[in-house]
Image (cartoon, rainbow, N blue to C red; front, side, top):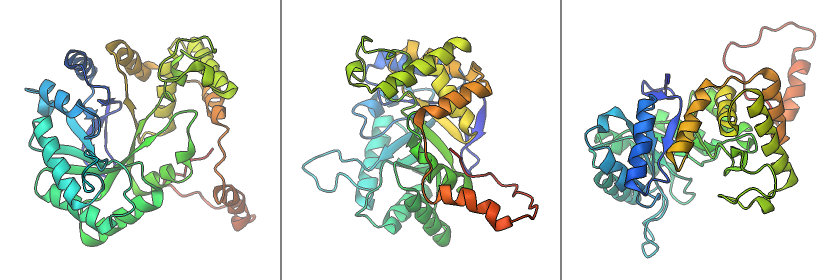
Length: 333
């Protein structure tokens, strides 16, 4: 597995990341980490809100902690009785970070995510608190998860103005059926040089190959509740998988990798068999016609102002031949 720089940093991160949200059984989790490590993977992602995940992960990484880039998150509430147990304010960051370090049995977090946007806490407080954690050596890098593009851009502008630590990556949902982040978040990431770690790559299992009809066994979703469009998408992915000698899950993950070199899919497998299958996505090559069929699944429309800008660019230049800029272009539909 190849490694790439994460955002505008020098941190080397593998193409595929391992999600630890399902880490509850220590033996199963250990087998999955072993498999991921043997495949060349080096980033494991967890969160304070993932039940016992941090504790299980901390125990099984004993003796090989430095082999991995350890990623966790704060913001979501941990105690319904405490009004300050949730949010992106300094108190919750400090408390959650100390608890996370203890559970993970480590002296630093390699990558700390703000798990979601806290509309009530000033961005200045969040970014200054994150920078203080970095300067204290308890956190090395910071990222933003589930936040609007304008908030992330404002946060990094504040960081740049004050000499604080900026976000280097985003964590967002992305799959062939859920492409709305292409409107603002992906173009922003390209402009700011940020990487994207993507979750829900199989659309809650819809694209795993299990739900090609309503008689499929129930998993994370009830197949009888899926729309005809979702069933049609599942059948399309399955057909393409057969054509390229791969599994449906591998095709969905390979599609995300094809969309941009900045994208690092998070593998949210719950069993070693699933993880082994997901890792095989690196060996899948999708022909152009297959990519076109997959792109058509979401019926994605960029919307205003992107649709207007697409037509006005030609109008602005008129009959003049203007050499396109060499920087990366925004995402298209």
